[in-house]
Length: 381
Image (cartoon, rainbow, N blue to C red; front, side, top):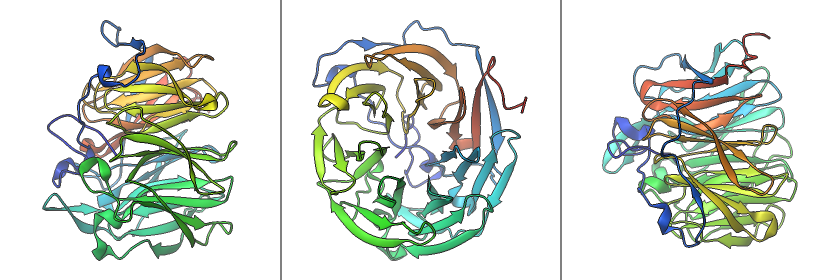
């Protein structure tokens, strides 16, 4: 699910699992003609501060992928894969707690063995769900005590990476946990080309409910609990789809681009943001999925995120080592607010409180914390 420059890839079977292959693509390949906001000539801003947070036990590359911010506790949850730990970062002190003891395993990717462990996370109702590529398991952790509870196998570890958890997504509207599998951006398709749905009406107990068949491998996600829709990309088909969370049926699809990464959602105004290689597209999904705008961010995108409070979109480009902070107008149009320097390979971004955001830096085994200098509340509280 992740991105990189031409010399490193999220799952290349060596130390560069931390970033996925990016198929560099031109904005001109969009099927729909639209105006594109470009980065050329935009001044790098100094209004933001980037602070590294080291992950305990990390020595060199850590295969970071998904991470999540829990608004109810102010904690950032970081599955630290090959370390066998899930790290939990306090937003105020930046102190790191650990949930340890997760199994790791040698996973074959492109003919080479790569050590992997927990790589996916989703915040549920008083609990946090962890997906582990190392042994193809799902585990439940208490969000307050950090105690690990029930674990179950999604597939036998021998089934390989195509059957292992990729995204783990809590759907509050139906009290379900949706699981995607495989690693489609690096050539590992989902083994069953389906989304597994677990009943978590009892949050600490996982019960397999059904599978949603797809015509390819799911990549990226966004959930609209208000409208009851789950958005994901279908890697092989190069399309973005909407799935009704109650009927579990695909109800809409859009051919946006053939190189799709992460998704983010403005559920209030009905805008879906789709990361496409080196740019992000805005879709008006509240009115049929019309393409509204596009903005170039630089290549190497992965998961993007949107702050509904600030009406800001965050997109980290690992190749250009920049974070684009983009204002989204009520018309769905993009306006570049800031371009923040990061580090090569930093990709995937999660929004915290106010103008705080977090990026993963797999090559150095750390998290980068972004704060606005005039809104840095983390040191005042």
